[in-house]
Length: 298
Image 1 (spheres, rainbow, N blue to C red):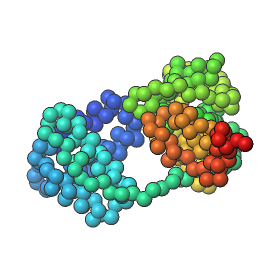
Image 2 (cartoon, rainbow, N blue to C red):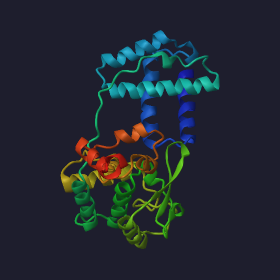
Image 3 (cartoon, rainbow, N blue to C red):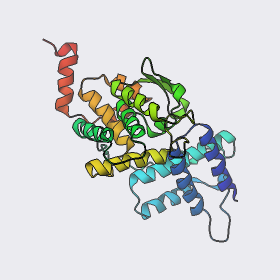
Image 4 (cartoon, rainbow, N blue to C red):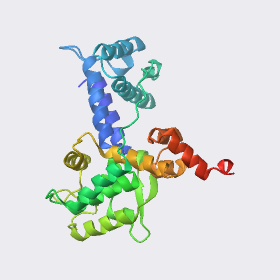
């Protein structure tokens, strides 16, 4: 194995220890393997990380453009390489993070597709109606109620344990990105769904959501559950767990919730990130302003 490949393995192991989500680990592993493959000619080994320079990295970046990759994909791959070199810099394997000198491609600003409140409630109600003869309908309903009712990331949802819940006061301790913890409330519908699920749930594991073998439900398993119901109820299999997180933020803001409060609930470090999660029309925002801001009152 080349020094470059070994460096990637060390970095991915460090990401795992830092509690990176399975989704992040998969993407970074794939992107960095492609990076290693690019610099590994047939019958030869890849150069050591310290032998790479800005010119070589620019050639690699140009190859991504030649493949006509989406700018978002190129930005992600570049971010993975920058993070790798930052890790190697901390290790003192390289003298500088040369990947920082590469220009980041501009990506078109895209708003996430967010289901309306009516569409979301129709979907969740259909899950609760248990009309598809699913093996664990109580679990599926609790999963949807927490995704939409609390705005959780899918990685946060599947990592929940029973001891993370204050069932009396309706609070959840959520472990977010970078091992940051936050307290998130859950409402009566989620509480009722949880009570029903826990009454049917086999007591085999401290994980909240279990798979058919009695072990912790995986990230992939949870995504497949959401995809199944989205396809069966709305005929749209493109709806994913993050759509419900977007819906959570958007619908809260539309109903007059404070943007900074939503930021806290979502676990965002920056308010700008929260703003991208909301799809509220200017008319809706002005209505919230007129209702809530002292200067708007006559």
